[in-house]
Length: 493
Ligand code: PNW
Image 1: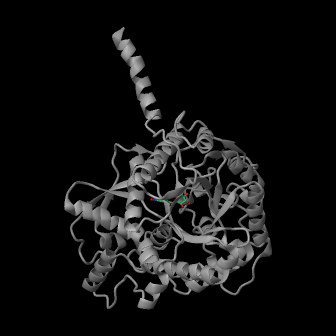
Image 2: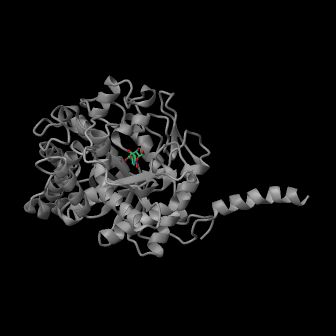
Image 3: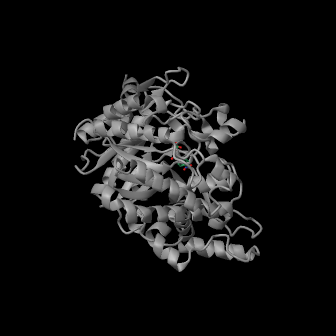
């Protein structure tokens, strides 16, 4: 009898505990909630109404081994045709804003500076933006979320410094055509992924493997393009359009693998190599000192006449410094960081420059994505680190979420949001960190890049087998909506 009672009561207590670990404080009144997607992942209509080809169209159509199940974004969620329905889904969640991205090739089909604007592409984004505004939802726009026009890859892509001016021309077009409606701009989404995965490891389009060389060149062009776009906005558009502008950088939280000084330094070095790579120039003007020192020294030992890490001139440092109105962070997971011995000088890669081994803890709850484990406390430590490292800026979480393999009863996602949001609220209330926005990734299941449609991040599920791409809210959508309405994570605050 006693054992039976224990067997019955114990799981209930555990369940109860799991459900109520979140804080019962309420979110401050200024705090805003949003939801996000990106153009290539949801729009489809890959060759409609004058859109040009981009690197993801290209890789999906020409490389049969690059994407799981040979999936592609030709139709995706069909948001190009279903945007009004999307806006109703967004409205139903009760969020304050929608973060979406523009397809460069839809706006400038040939990508290059000086080439004609595609009016039908502009119309699509004006219609979507107006529909959001008419429904009381603030548009938050990312200019570049990985879908580079193919003609720009044909001239070398981001490692080619000429891309700076091609991007700035595109940015000017976008301010001119959409700037009356949009008040929140983000130049680049996750430049680290573009440069490291696209030009270093070669696991994302365009699939170039040149770690320790092309990835650094890519970042250099991106940072300069960002700074020039920021100044363009300041000099010619801000006074009449009154918006703000920044960049979105992503990072994992790196927890020292032990209490040793070497591992603590390794965790800090990882944060500087992954996040400081972009944020340090944008806040302070130059790459993190540890990165400059290490890449310079290893390059020298390797016989390079110049460092593999490109240099900013003094003038450029002044120009790049402070080109942000907020700090926008995408974050999902945590890794342990462990110091390793200095790699041989014949090892030429970003990883050997960083000199840190990163790994996951098997005890951390898994997701459908191999790199993503559920570690709610990581986000609290991360926002504290960002706040301390960059002089207490206004921080937006512009992406956070978890994947599974499908299903409407997604208790895993509900508890992920509850526990991550709880840690953010504690960072605000107990640690004094200035986080003002939180964005769930994603509005709906979509094209998860090289993983195709198998890994699902949506608050709404999408039936990719129906030509209608039918959307259905998941349990997590109801939960997110409840949090936004009550400003409370648990049953009552
Ligand atoms: C982000 N990591 O990418 C992107 O901005 C989204 O487009 C994407 O769908 C989402 O996260 C989920 O993957 C990331 O390995 C991909 O740490 C990988 C990592 C981080 C972000």
